[in-house]
Amino acid sequence: MNIWKWAWKNMWHRKSLTILTMSAISIAAAFIVFIAIMNDGVEKGAKEGFGPYELVIGADGSRFQLMLNTFYHMGTPTGNISYDMFEQVEQSGLNDISVERVCI
Image (cartoon, rainbow, N blue to C red; front, side, top):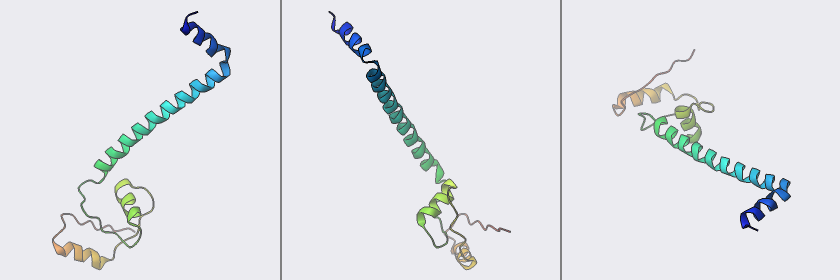
């Protein structure tokens, strides 16, 4: 008997185990592809997300929260800096862009 015929008969003799194994392999392969695609997307987003900014000044709070909110628009904002701080940055001449946001 040919080894391939023997393997085929053995696989279908144990149908439930064969289906379970094939499902597990398919799910694992799909998960690996999903992770690879997500990794590429996160890297691309990080490269494009930071834009022209080299420095971000924010209110006291978590640096991580400031970065997520500023670049990815995720989470809650850390709050506003004082107007005196804004004027210092504006007058220092070291900035290319200063944006004053007024919220009503």
